[in-house]
Length: 475
Image (cartoon, rainbow, N blue to C red; front, side, top):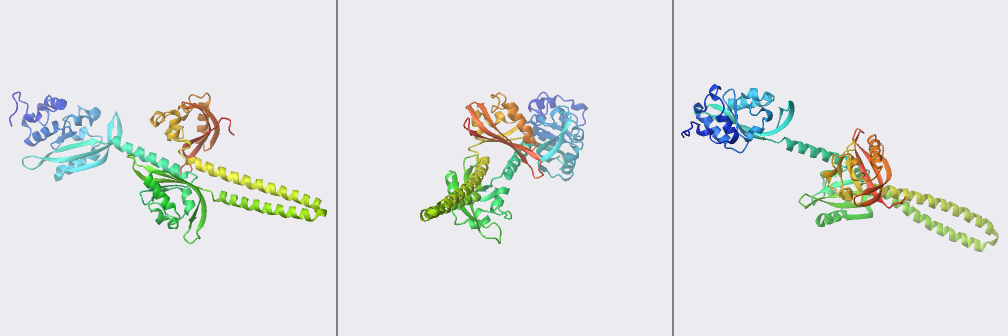
């Protein structure tokens, strides 16, 4: 193919800004010489390069002189357009220890290579930075079949790599929060209810030595079969409707050689949805109320025994008038003892109920305001209930100091209280107080707490703020 009347070789026609820059370059004083004298293989490669919308560069000759198109011009950043015509060793001195051997391999063998998620420590803005790339090197052969250069295409994926790392860190942070939660929690996936996660409290409930993760429910806990829990999970998985159970008896063999034990539990089965809306698992939250149930049973027995005792005392009083005074004193003494014992049992039952209620409330995400903060008080996440109260999206509060968000900014004195509470929680103290707040949805009163989250080494790695709405004036 002949050149156009202006003498420009056909392979340098078009190409946008880089085509114009290459045509205006002083090639006569460059080792490659005038384009009209370039080898046919280089000319064909340049025609492909300049007219490609994909980032493309050509490295020609033993010195690997650099030629490239508009799309590739963003890759060298501030080195563009200085890098045009430069030897690769000079142009890429910051990453030559990585790419130099790759170029040498292609030149020596003639075999192309493709690399994915390759880290290149490029200098950008005067500082070396980790950048990540997918790219390929393909040999360009001259008419004599010898390798004359390298055809390079690729694109940067640094943002994708960083986004993936951030997401993984976020998932690990929430996994650690759930692992440390005081209430038993598990995540089951698929129609066979395979354990994806079980926290420490859940393993203590079913048997700490059991390896349940990766196993189906009936495989991990075979004694569960026939007790109705698998059927309830099937129903939640099919219907998408949550199930709340209270006071259910479950029989568990908590050790391999141990007996089957009965435990009394309250539990919630909450369906989990994929981004597209399909159900892919069930979130399990359990509260072990065995001690409370036993206390209630003991209280009922004691009350019955007291009734029987009272009846016998009354009969004795009627039959033995002469012992009336002594019997009355005995009855008063017994009743006082009964009242004290009843009060003691009632207090014990109240304590057990309060503990169970707090455990259940700590993860009942549909009833509480809950979130996650960095140790310096920066908001990282909040549940739907908390966001609805301030009529905001998560991206409108994420990254802000907790005390500067709409949960507290409209209430005089609240930001200072919350800031002090964050400092205390970051130091390892559980903070709890009553707050009355002016929210976009109106004035609300809360039982508010901030709980430090620790890693396996005992270090505080975050703070979980939680609030339960109470009526104004409620104790």
